[in-house]
Length: 219
Ligand SMILES: [Zn+2]
Image (tube, rainbow, N blue to C red; front, side, top):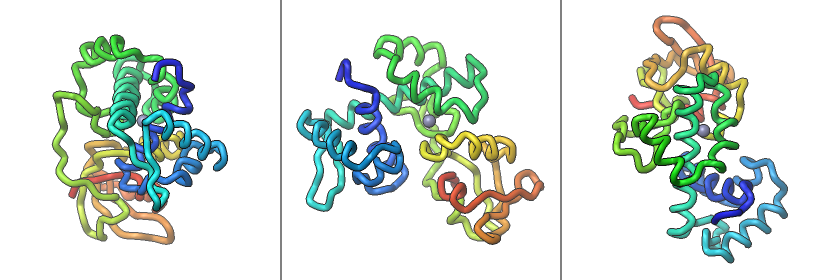
């Protein structure tokens, strides 16, 4: 898809991200996530359908074709490698790297990607804990669930921050301040007025339920 506008690439990547988050990919979800108008999403989806990257079934669900999936996977891989580069090498603050990587990913050729994999040691996950497709260093975490679904008294380990939550820099800063980072053990103390009470290394903290909905943990 050489020469396509980044926005078009973003559509395919968004469908894959929705799948990853367990959300049925529909045009309305793309409208929400990319902040573009419904007519322009419809138009772009039609174009991507014509070009063989995705199909729309009778229930309005979007399906990536083999070509579309390969393309989206490649974009997601470049995105996550860029995030590792930004955090590990360029020392960009963790809450900010997602947004920077969204721009960078479109500039990374397949050849540059190979150099990045070598330089970074073929990382298995991005700095937000999401798997990097194609890495030989797969990180086994077992089944993941939303932090919001862990019952009171349950302990768990933070594994992954959803791509959607990563777009909210202030929320990401909050997670970093509260040390709710991938690998962190947490005890859930229970819900409280739209928030979730947690103990992090013995310190009591709280996050909004909507944030806990986009943080994935293993129990
Ligand atoms: Zn990201």
